[in-house]
Amino acid sequence: MRKKEMIDILSFFIFFFIICSFYIISSLGLNIQYGFTGMFNVGIAGFFAVGAYTSAIITGPDYPDTMFGGFELPILLGWICAIVVSGLAGVLVGLVTLRLREDFLAISTFGIAISIQLVALNAESVTRGPNGLYALPKPFSRFLDSAFMSNLCYLIICIVTIVFIYYALERVVKSPWGRVLRSIREDEVAAEALGKNVFLFRLQAFVLGCGIMGLAGAMYANFVRFISPQDFLPIFTIQVYVMLIVGGKGNNLGAIVGAIVIWGLWSASDSLINFIVTPDYQTQAASLRIIIVGMVLVLMLVFRPSGILPEKKHLSS
Image 1 (cartoon, rainbow, N blue to C red):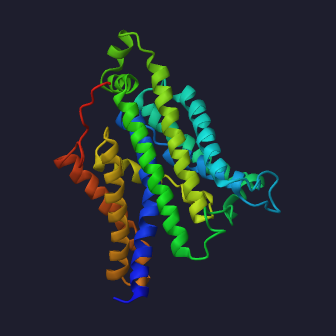
Image 2 (spheres, rainbow, N blue to C red):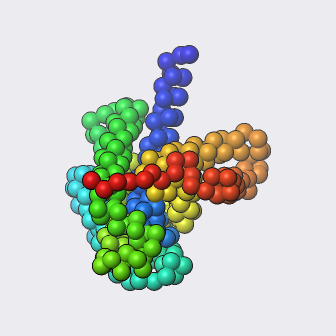
Image 3 (spheres, rainbow, N blue to C red):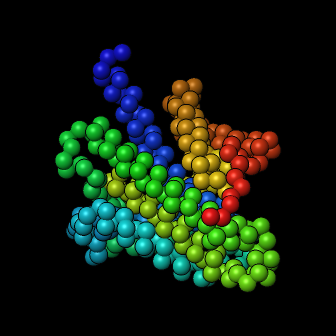
């Protein structure tokens, strides 16, 4: 195999795992909300968008047609601000919605995610609306001329971030705080009867998950270097839920495995459709990817409802 072909194959896998990393981080954020606490948050795309736009405004260039943003600050600061702003958005949403029943919580968070996308679409003085924010900075892009090396460095950043979040969440769920979250998931009334402030614990878990989703959005924005409201459609939320359920909710390693499996299936089905369907019908055939992923979800729920890696029993330290 020639050197160029080898680099092309490596470039494909590096790009694949970088995109997969954004889903992994979002899935880990959802796991603390849904997997460990039982909160059915259907607004993942909204918090992902909040993080992406926060980092884009903090780190992006000054656009002539916007009235706010373009601060061109360091990327790391943009990511930290994305976590904080997404967490604050989680506080506001959580204070309003977390006292609702699970089905109403799902409906309200879905509506909030749609509202965030509509705000991004119409607040043109900040987000440039459908034209999006472009030319966002990417880590190491100023120092590396090679796209291959730039993506490789970005992949290392993603891996380090995932490992840090994974071990942090593992320590959290094994702590007494994590045990309270699981008790709330299993029997909210019993947890409250034992003197636990159920609402406060649910709010803490909700904010933590939203902050992690915001970080994923910020990393996405600074990798693709262009964001628009079309990047934050509800399909993103569905994908993350399928990843977590297939991998195994209540298991952080399962969330990672599920994200890799489903994103691999999503990418492979795209290539398969391009191979077997003529170009005239590829637009219509793209919906087959959603059908394939839906079938996988149904089969998993029927034959292995606890996922590839079921939840482990935790002992508090």
